[in-house]
Length: 122
Image (tube, rainbow, N blue to C red):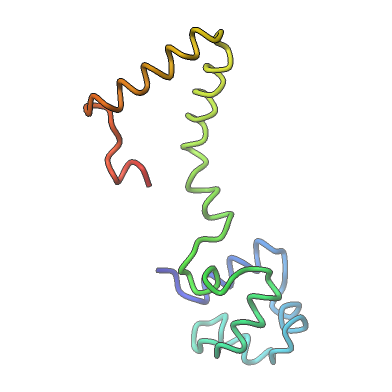
């Protein structure tokens, strides 16, 4: 699980916000925010809520329980290349070819040899 300071740093960078700007948006003292950024203190729930609202993210994202959209994008980008290629090939086929491609993919999965494991599916 990510720690709060790295999540907060990533979100500030992604949102193109400075620590001072976040302090202005939240009303949290700069010295306290600095402690959050260094990892020497964790925010109280009330301050975590202020930070999450200012950054327009959920508390789950801020705590590391859920991933932020750019993290998800980075992790799925390489998979999307294959999905895009498969979709382009599907679209290039006529209706009969599209049906055959779907049937073939079902056969590959049901045969077991090419079915994704739980690790592959993540």
